[in-house]
Length: 211
Length: 211
Picture 1 (cartoon, rainbow over the protein chains, first blue to last red):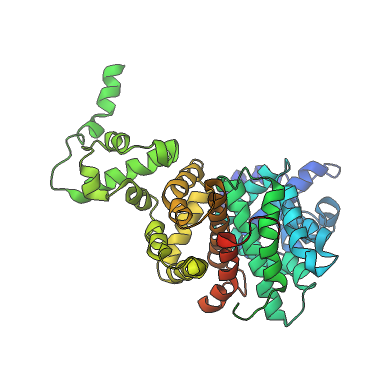
Picture 2 (cartoon, one colour; picture 1 turned 60 degrees about the vertical axis):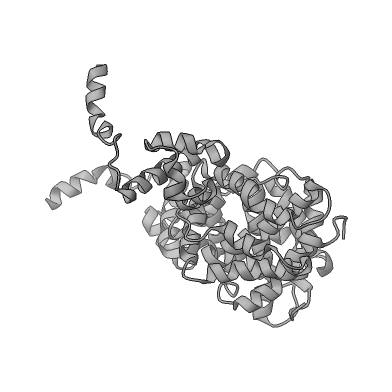
């Protein structure tokens, strides 16, 4: 019976010696392995080494084909835009304007043609068992620190502030781009930014005691 | 061939004459039909009459078994709590305290044992094709008007304000209860209410021009 099982898997086994010079196939194998391990192990524990072993490629090939672990995660989630790049792109500058820069960058990306793909990615990560762990760990280690690094105060307070900003941003993604409730879905980016920026700014730099 | 088809469906046909006095079976048939039609037609177009026809019951039985169309929708979505009841329960009172009452009621319900079921319902409606239409129409016709009815100003402005409140509330549901990002997921309800209430209140009654 074991022999039969081995024969059944012979098609897979023939791919173990992946042909060099077939970069698309290698990249797809890496992304499939990454998707599987990020879902089952989370972002933190799915190491490049484990993903390489699962994809049956040399770990040294992963940076070449898929970049950093962060970039590999974004590609594995089929996200058309890397949210880390978006947040990092507007983090520098005056702290008083950070709320407005965040909402304007968010709206620019989601109102662009990439928005549909981002909505599909968000729907997938919010629903698939295991994905919520991966996205929590990814946000915690890759996105939140970009924001907290700009804020004042003790670490837990800065993290809570950044979490609250994320809650409003994700809530807008859900209501404006997934549920598409009106008039929010059709409001201009300018109008939405004017409404939301002060609330983000209050989370970032407003008083932490009861107000 | 038609005769064969008819015979194939004879098991279904035998249920057309649903036995009186089998309320669980009737209720389940109504809920299954409602789930199907709400998903394919949306909340507005899935009439009680169509749902009754699909479930092969007398339309007059639906209020008896499942209440109003709004209550039928909530039951069909398997939501353990009716969000309309929650919002209606805190809508009355001073307008200046509406933001705080909203966030406190939201947290009380989601922090309760019903929270897990609400998270499952939200995950389902955000992902299933057709469900986003149904939840948009349900929110637009059943929830948003409770809020806008308390606000001042022209109708489109009041709707946008209520939409923005919904965006923050749903964003909290996603980050605190589905993704469970820390420290927001473990923060006390009191702390979260203190942070979020002023932002909800600003959406409800703050200046609409650029601030």
